[in-house]
Image: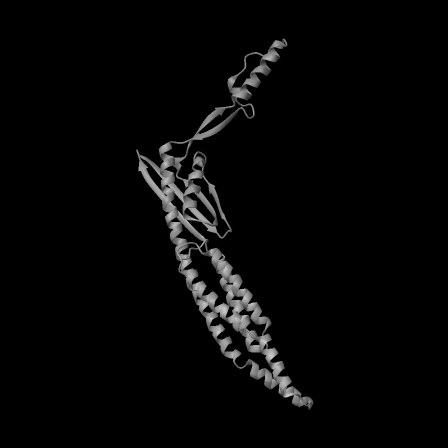
Length: 292
């Protein structure tokens, strides 16, 4: 089953614990990407969970650019503790002692004024471990919602791709049927031109030239390969593992064969069919870029 790399998931978990309401609002967005790239935005005090969040995502996804954020309810915000830079404090003490030893009267140093010194203090958030565990567990609901979204979108992409692949098969069949009369039409055209020029011609030489023309314009091999690619494409849609890269490779092969057919085209109908094939392939390629 195809799974889209473009999806959205959300979960809002709210519970009351010891008369305190705990609320965790997770959001998860993704777009297509060649590799797995996970960005986690967590409130102060929860940032240590980022590694575990990424690990959970890696178990589910193989590719995509993922953006994850957590918003907290008011009651679950972390308490911010004041942390003193002891190294800087020691340097300040040595500087004060040096001033005193020089004979300059410094008076009594006010600790509260000293704490205002730039960089001496910083605030670090501390959080109840149980709250962090609950927040991480609540992320599972967001992952489930996200996975359901990408599976639904994957189903829609699969339907579209399958329909386009079927259209390619129909056009290939039309081209194959039309190829039966290509040499005959080419022969009639050459004879008509020779008649207009009123030039006597060697019939055997004309037939030889028609054989060369038929070989040059032969697209049976390309049409056969297109049929094989369509079969492989349908098989890939039924696989359970990620097939985005496989489908992308098949789209390149589709495009290569159609370009060859276009280069051998000798009539407007074949040219029109190859243009339609290229349109279908480009529509499929755009959607394949969103498949994991």
